[in-house]
Length: 111
Length: 115
Image (tube, rainbow over all chains, first blue to last red):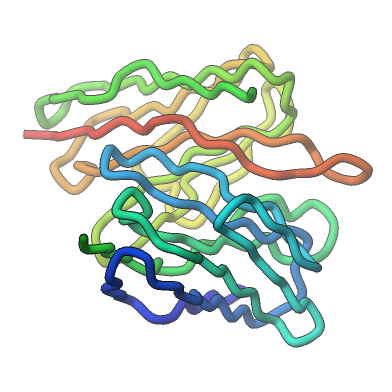
């Protein structure tokens, strides 16, 4: 099956700092999503980004499908950004709907 | 906004009990999914369904079954709960894809403890 690797596994930031999270995947994809899991376990959709660049406030994401990676940028981090960030991909081809998740990046933003 | 709801946030059951986890979505999505999340193992797909009464096994279907009698509702069934099924269970839904986005949306999760 498709492999998804996220880096770094853990990240500690001072409030106000910027960061880049990376997701590498081993095959072509139909779908790539970034999620933030809050302390209560809810997965919150950040981006649906199988290719290209998107921005939403202090967050932006870029996927380079031909090189099989995606980046999530967090600027001016806040303590509320803490949590686990997951990248998930759906492999290419018809009829393959399931998402394969990376192991996540645990982000801690300290005041 | 897409809404995916799950019947319980926390559930405690005894070994051998039959357990039903319910998931409802209000966006007319064709696809529905059940995942479990465990420390160190991440999120893994148990079952999914792309239509009413249709189901497909995911990566870890053993010990589980599912039911999709209506488009908006997808149930996960533990026929005889065991302690190794203690986990966080997450339901998701999406459109089929093609000309529309197949972005998946998740419910709040159910933390199941089997004693």
